[in-house]
Length: 122
Image (tube, helix red, strand yellow):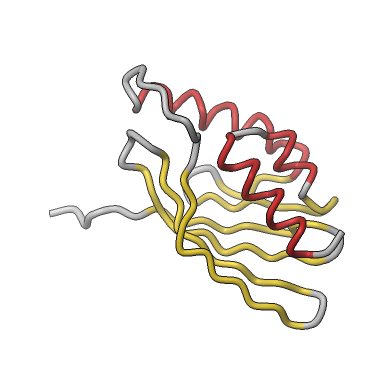
């Protein structure tokens, strides 16, 4: 499987909110970096996602959406065997959105670092 295949599966997992699909695309040393939760190792990711999904359900006020997450503005650049991808993500019905920076190679998704979009206080 190539980097683009891993990236496609990873994106599918986020769209569905499915930890098993996300982790199937992740390399053994995968790290997810969320500024609110810190650095999450692969072994701890499923619990992180379940906590996120519980918070999202509260923010959606019981509404149901086809996708857990919508991804857009995906840009990818390959440098040898490594691919760097950027995307805009949004969780429907919540106002929660941000950007992700993803590193992928032939072993799978190595890392993702996310940011949250928010209006400045004041």
